[in-house]
Image 1 (tube, rainbow, N blue to C red):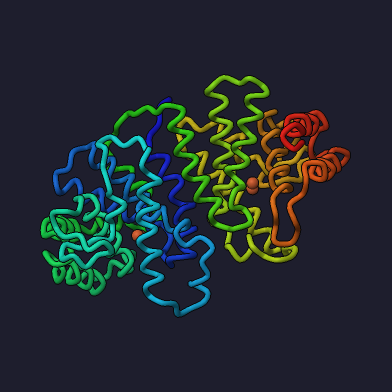
Image 2 (cartoon, rainbow, N blue to C red; image 1 turned 180 degrees about the vertical axis):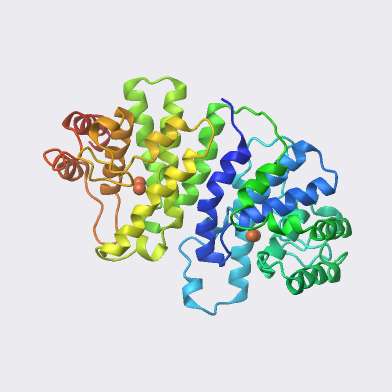
Length: 407
Ligand SMILES: [Fe+2]
Ligand SMILES: [Fe+2]
Ligand SMILES: [Fe+2]
Ligand SMILES: [Fe+2]
């Protein structure tokens, strides 16, 4: 199928950034700003269109390993911790991030760009690599990442710009490659470069400089990219550590039961992998609350379905995946969210996925209850039928397909 990796990553970066905000205290659109700065520097350096395309994808994904590296770590809340422990976690986010993108359909086979995105020319980075050993794309991303972390790039006052330019010059040839700093200083002299970074412009700005490249993807590769995201989503909380992955395995069993063709089967599994992508923006304190949620907390939880809708709607070729995944909390009587869609507006596949999601949640442990058996989960789901939340025929299917597995 036709697939533009950058259009996919630009859409999902909103959710990834939310997850990192909680851990790294980055600001909104951090990865898009890194992608924009990297892309502009890449073009200045004379990288090919294909290299610039890959550079943008890698910059968008540069910290994708953060959520998994810091999984279940309370060091942030705990305050002071040994710096060695933090350093190990930082190295882990490079390793995990690199592994996650290993099977992405890049155009130029870039290697170890994310692994070495915290290396400095003088050897003072996480792995102590020096100049010639650091991939050029890693060097560009490292520079873009650093200036976005150290400075408020949305403040384009003369004083602020002087501060950034001075920092770049002072570290030229020391931390950062001379050509990278010089390319940046040429860009920095243009007012448009800074305006492009504004929140309301940033998405458009990246798209404007991205080379237009038509690419296609094998269905199995699409499934493996979506699995990377389901692993990141699942790592957000120990209680949902397997939720998206397990849902996808069950979704696969559903597709086999119906004998759907490969395309429909993969789309259904991708929908399962990504259905909770919006949870990356739900605070962990709510996901792990040991007790019933307050009304306002539940309102925050509901946001995740709307965010999934916004993200998936923006991806070309994802129309069906979007329809199925973003309706996973809709219910037949219109009492679901985010749209309150009714029975007749929901497709058969969306209804199955919604029911399957509830089944999966019930057979998992939650902070306030133990995991249920298949039988008990089915009792709870059958209770939804007279209330017109799910239809009986769909619930019967779930009961039938998973009874054998549970036995
Ligand atoms: Fe990083
Ligand atoms: Fe970063
Ligand atoms: Fe959900
Ligand atoms: Fe879910």
